[in-house]
Each structure stands twice: as structure tokens, then as C-alpha cells.
Amino acid sequence: MFRTSVRFAASMALACSAALSFSAPALAAWPDKPITFVAPFTAGGANDLVARIIAKAVGAALNQPVIVENRPGAGGVIGAAHVARSPADGYTYLVGSNGTVTNSLIRSDQPYKDEALTPVALLSITPSVIVTHPSNPAKDLKDFVARAKQAKSDRITFSTAGNGSTPHFVAEMLKEATGLPVEPIAYKSGSEGVSAVIGNQVDATSEASIVTLPLVQSGKLKALATTWDKRMASAPDIPTTAEAGFGTVRIGHWAGLYAPTGTPADVLDKMNAAVEQSLQTREVQDALRQSSIEPGGGSRASFAEFAANERKRLGEVVKNGHMQTQ
Image (tube, rainbow, N blue to C red; front, side, top):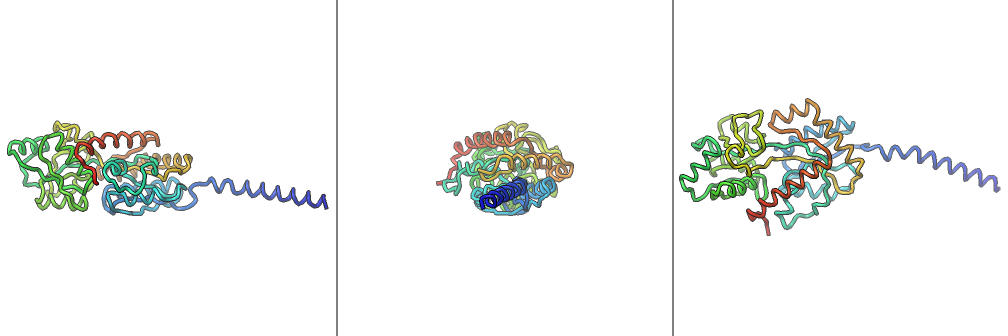
């Protein structure tokens, strides 16, 4: 009986050992099912476009489908909150934006902690273009400011996509840089804000190049300046805000991948590597740049540093412009 027990114990040990050796690779084989990228804005904008272009390429690199799920609302907060509360298993990511680092500075009701999201990779930067109605005689931003000062305008109306949106930041930056009485006028979305300029209901606005350039090219808007570091290759005739003498008016619609905090570091490293690989392909670069979107890239650490610097820089604009909600 003793020998039988020994044989049984030995058999069980071998079986357990075999099971462990069989299951260990399966547990480590991330990804073994589809991945979700949550775009916290409606379909058709820069954030959604970037999410879809890169999701396709990342899916090919990881040999798993990457599904883009739109969860719009509250300036990106709804989608971000969903990801922050998702399992930290490497299968759900946020395609975050400027609001991901500034919403908690502005909103008192953000339903998640900033620390609940971890930076993974910088995906892209889309220049913003300041635009006005074609009937405005100003030829560029410098001329626009000079004419407004000469006319001693009592207010310059500037449509935004709501409190804390990128156009709102541009409005506050312009107010501080030029001394003009720039008044932000909130609309429900960036497209509505742009429509207000086309309808000559407000003096100006700014939006991502993917939205504004086709309207500039069709004659429905006039471009005054682009708000990023350099002129756009697809529209080299539009000067930068720095060239107009307003270097502090600087912001881009960037997109970055975030994961729920607690996601294993090796999984985050693999996702970062897949994004980096995707951004190096000609197909992705061409797809982004034809919409005047610059590819991102870099390590997890470099994206975390970029996001921290943006939060600090834009936090000063929030403070100076009294952009906080109660």
C-alpha cells in the first residue's frame, strides 16, 4: 500500500509538472485575444482617425485584431473613465489627448484619478489652425491682431468646443499673448465651432488641421496661423504663431496611448514596441501625413515626460485664464 501511495504521489507530481509546463507559455502569450482602443471622441475627428490608422497597424504587428470603440462625451472624460476602470490585463487602452492631462486641472467632477491611467506611447501630433471668415481682410494672424488693435475692438469672439477644449486653450493663449479682449464662445463640438465661423457668427476659432484645411482649400475659411512648432508640409503657406510673434500660442492636438494602471510592465513594453514598429511603416506615415498629422513615437518614459511637461505648461494657462469649473 505504501508503494502504491508513493507511485500515486509521483504520478501526480509528474502530472502537475506537465500541466505547469504546458500552461505557463499560455499565460505569458499576450495577446491571445482582440485588443480594444477606446477613442473618447466621436468618429471623424483627428483622435478617431489616428486611433483607426494605428489600430490596424498594431493589430498586424501583434497578430491580433485591435478594435476601435468610440465613447465620446465630457471632453474625453467618459472614455477615459471607462478605461481607468477596466481590468489591467493589457486588452483595453485609451487613445488619450490634451484633455487627458488637463481635465483634472479644470473639472472638479472628474470621475477617476489621473493616477489610474499609465502612459504607454505617443501616437501623433496634429497641428491646430487658427481660422477666420474669408471676408475678414486680415492676411495672417499678425495682421489680424494689428487690425483688431487699430479698430479698438471691444471683444474678439472665438468659438470653442467647450470648457477645456483645445480651441479654448488657444483663445486664452491669444488673450494673454496679444492683450486683445478675446472672448471664448462655447459650442457643443469643434465642428459646431467651425460652422459658427463659416456662418460669420464669431470672429475666429482653431481646430485640427484635418478639419480646417479642407475648408480653407475650398474657400469656406481663411487660415491665419498654425499653432505648432513648424509649418505643415501639406500647407506650407500658413505661418506659425511663433512667426507672427506669438510664440506662447503653442498647442497641438496630440494623441497618446494609455493603459489602466497595474497593467504588467512587460505587456506595456510590448505594446509600446508594436506602436513604434507601426509608426515606422510607410503606410502609417503616409496615412497620417496626408491629413497633416505628424507621427509620434518614443519610449514609454519619453511619453510620460512629454505628458507631464504638457500638464505643467497648460496648467499655467488654466490658472491664468481661470478655466476651472466649480
